[in-house]
Image 1: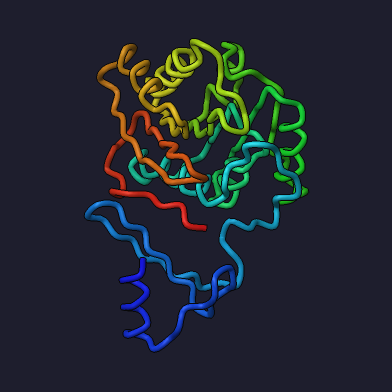
Image 2: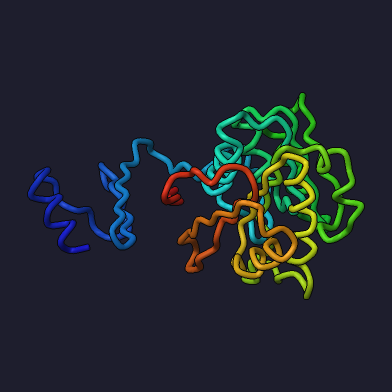
Length: 246
């Protein structure tokens, strides 16, 4: 970090701002072995601040991560625009809202927690009061949830399952159930995009059921943890790294 700071001072003539203050130019570097990503913040506010976020719920996903997941699902389908997206573990609705912002035509979600559903409905309503995005109370591990029209006909299942930090991880057998339904959806032509802190468990369950299905992963550095995006089905021709600078 000191070497980078010294180089930037020499190259630009600017001096670094005191700690915890906003610099005139916000430059961020992400270094991962031989890969370096440079970003410059051009706006006065971070991209993670969204006007639609009127309500939050524990374990809420960063909007920038949600936006990246929706875009990755589209890329996994060969770059074809998503038309129907379902999130069976929608929390406060961040993935649903970001899908709306990316012009996905039909969006729906569900969650097992009534407070999360209340927050999700409030947030998606803030995007467009004239357009209702269905948000239902349903359990991801229940077969009837996956039989619902909004999820059984989705061309992308994009979801953030509990990490075990703010929201407890699901019980034993959770990843087997999730893998079973994802495999069913992929066989129908959909793709899955799941953010989890237990990617090995999910991948093992998918391979057990359908070893021929394409799998790809993208590890993130986020809130002191390293959750991983697991892409199921479709094309694996995706960018070599995904960063979550907000």
